[in-house]
Length: 343
Ligand SMILES: Nc1nc2c(ncn2[C@@H]2O[C@H](COP(=O)(O)OP(=O)(O)OP(=O)(O)O)[C@@H](O)[C@H]2O)c(=O)[nH]1
Ligand SMILES: [Mg+2]
Image (cartoon, rainbow, N blue to C red; front, side, top):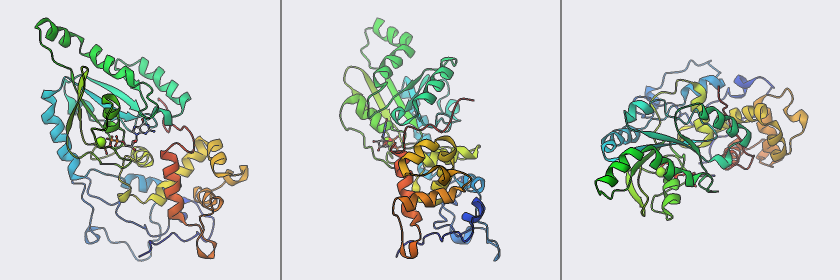
């Protein structure tokens, strides 16, 4: 059966009016403790005349994705910690704050770790420079990498060896030939498996452009250099800042199946119109007045029209437009974009 599309807003109201239509997929409602989707029966009943479904912040608050396999993944990480010398937290350079697990110290305890900001070729170089400056003032090692261009990849093994110098020297003194063991963990879809493949030079770990691909841990050896443990991507049970959920959704760390991607795409439109208007205009052939004083849904619709995503009666195919917009953002086609700057 064809999926139901948004209706065009009758009047140019604000965002609330634009989203005042039933969620195409209400799957976004989930039990944050178990990650289980709430069945219709368990969902709070809406009053008959209740029109407004969500404002951006309501939607953002509703984004949670902590399925059962993540609870297990965290338990497995805990169990494997005693076998590894160091951990690498792999984050997304486009959202350096949102993609850092707030519970990382709790998960890793006293285990040393380094932070890697991956997908840096998709991030805004000017903002990345700000982040590098910011991290220089921190004690922790933070490396910016990109698995497609290879940028920064060569810095990882030396950084591991530097962090573990005392331990590795002690092994050498005892005549023990043992490679350092590193666990790679981080948010879903940040490129953990791809990084491992890149470091070992072959496709040993399964990697796909979809959140939640790796489901079990896997050891991979980089000949004569390091042993790496791939782990399933993990998030945390509750996003304290609502923008965190949105940023993770924009970048593909949250399973699209549980999201209302049309609403997510409209919010992304608003953010890009604010932060990267030139890139948005260039990519979608928008005029200055297509952005000026326009509501996010109007910009989104205009993009759909310019792309020719029309249905019968000339309405914009919003689902197709949302998929395209998110896809083009995630793959860097709109441009190099970073959504967060250091505070
Ligand atoms: N442009 C770009 N894409 C990347 C980079 N690293 C990974 N990818 C892509 O991101 C997608 C996810 O990569 P994976 O390696 O499967 O990510 P993961 O962190 O292992 O994901 P889970 O196992 O689901 O947690 C794939 O389509 C990769 O090709 C990168 O540095 N730059
Ligand atoms: Mg993986």
